[in-house]
Image 1: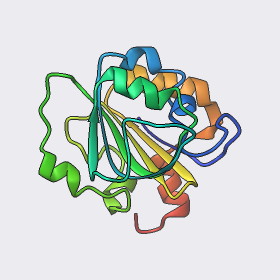
Image 2: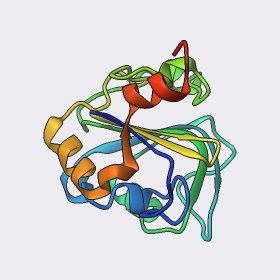
Image 3: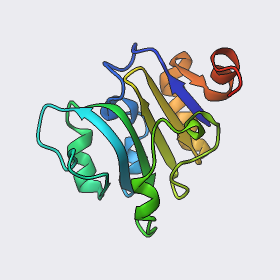
Image 4: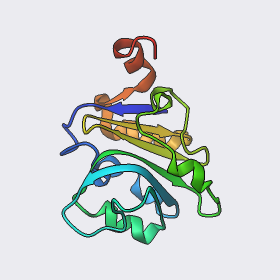
Length: 159
């Protein structure tokens, strides 16, 4: 239930949330979103910026980001249940460059049901705790969604 997208056949660029979340977006409408360690390029004003270390967006704020033409170059994007209070000190110190991002079933934000890691505009890692969401994602992206463990075995020796 851990995938990596390297190809941009179904996505215009890495990491465009509108395209990455397209097959599962309706299932995530009631979650809040934690975004940290961000570097991005956008076509409009957003509820995220470079002034803060992290952001916690409600579903309405996330919709603005989702519908924008924003490229997340680096960052961690996590969907968490609305009733969960996250540790802001932990969140502010997270990094997309942490080696744990490459480990299957390891989440930087423990409360996440979904975690997306944008890695240097070339890789989008997507980790799920919900098998149905993972299956829907994989069905949509087909061969473009590569199993993270298999990717590590082939390309990241020692991972």
